Image 1 (tube, rainbow, N blue to C red):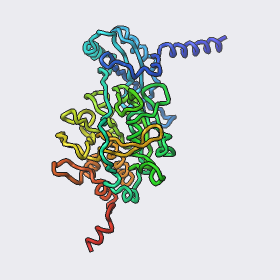
Image 2: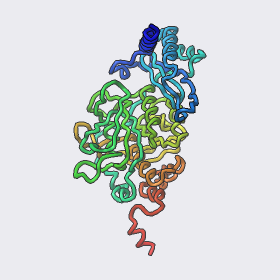
Image 3: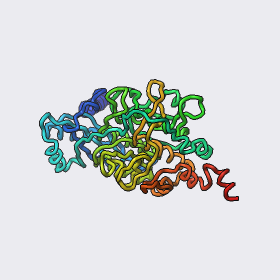
Image 4: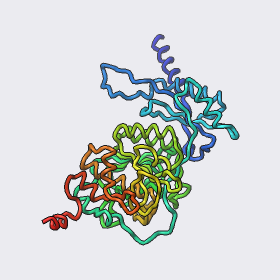
Length: 416
């Protein structure tokens, strides 16, 4: 009788957990969320507890207290007339992030202010929208970056072998002929589907990881790197490179990148300053992760996250952007992979950022201990007439390898 009672108690506890946890969003829940009516509410995760009988990694146990946090979130939603949409643990910040949506016509600013005063809330912010940074202009004549950067000579030194790159973007066609067989792990943080193949994410992935010397397509800059293809943005249709992201989808992808110990994070996107994303970037930078972002030329300081301290801001080498601290790389008429087993040409600072991200993988293969300031110094080895640091891949790899990487025979002959 006592055993039956105990089992009943366990079943009731499990059922209680199932009924109190917030319902997961349906497959398309994230995309249609209206940012102007959505807030992100962070509740504290419990601190880690030392146990002498197990290995101690210093990580948060995201399951501990989950039922209580769910009840707090439901209570907060009721009190402020919000709909609880989704939640995601973010142990890198020690918080659980709950997505809540206000009624039409409600003042999100007032709701955020009220929640910020609640002692149960660690932090709260409005949802922000972001977009990928690519041109829709007609294509210019072919200008292969592989020729500008002497890629075949660089690959004699390094191919990014074993370096973990996180691409936070739209969906990647992982079975594209130029990407099939590469070391790619794909995850979808937008909805519950497997994730469609989309233009922007597939193009960025090809620049970084396309298989060289396979008699088709292009050669990626870091073909032996390991790619985390993290879908946090979505395109309105399959034919366009424009895409939208939000604070929550981006934060989930960044948390995954941190969990998987990414060494380089590519953010070829831009939007308003976002405190939650800033905190996750701070964690990445503190762990020595190189964070690369594309410059938004429509914004004077290059936009967020490119303008955030510690982030490597990348513009096109043909750009005349006034922002300080940026680096310039090829961004026009870049041949790359496209969905449906195709290749094509793309232009935009997104693709300049993809070049630099992959180049950093080469540098980290050669010297895994390079820090962010050292990477910036290596990448900014040449300046154009406008004093914008133009990335010289040969010089950067030579510096990391501590020996000549390109035109070595010519250089030796000249010195004799």
